[in-house]
Image (cartoon, rainbow, N blue to C red; front, side, top):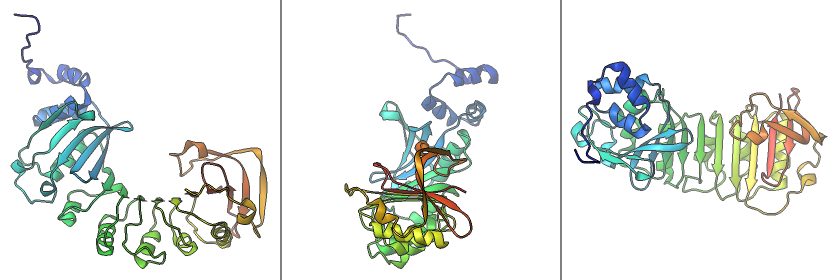
Length: 336
């Protein structure tokens, strides 16, 4: 036998215990590939307790199921548009391309009885997830209403392009409710700040509403938002709007709000006196640090505590602190 010769190893002839030990030493991509071979191999891979977030992304080129190891994407299962509507093709015609991180390894295959929803269910089961984490839309696909039926609950909806008002309404109606809604732009053709369709979105009970668009935001829209956490990056927000919001909050508006963060591309320095004009507040010294228990904005560890701030109180005794800094235009944190 010459050096470098390779012979196949009868992996699946091993009994369960040694097979499990071998699988533990495999790369994540190979573990996933093995889970597709047979029912037994799937159960062995499941038995080693892998855990990965599962997301769905609809981008300009494909629809994909994405498997994430820690914070990075590790495996991508890519489907053509006509393969993701429910019960539209025989399973042998559903052949996703499975690719590892950075495209180093890839294979394409079908699996008897597996349509898109079955591939997704397989991923969730193998990686011990009860539901999809995020559904990400860069475009609408044909038969997207049928596509919605291929999975049940998920946590985060991200929309990053504009649609016609009818498309946006249908999309949001189908995919809401969710815990977090991320809009990278105003998805509606009608950009009027008083667009009723947009207002229907704002009044939803999200845990987190994240808006990132280059247009102004009216005070009336801020006041109808019913989310616990609101983060907004907009073209500009005036001191007058912020002043009115604080006063409305003190009078009882936005009762679910726990954290509001507003940022802007405007490089000018905010006039804190104008924001706080006519507001009854207590200024806390910058050396006064307060730690927050179970902060709703845990993804931003810088705000697990606050230094200083301007404390304001509403009629029911609820206290919030208003903060300004060079990175974030305006922050309001509810303290109790």
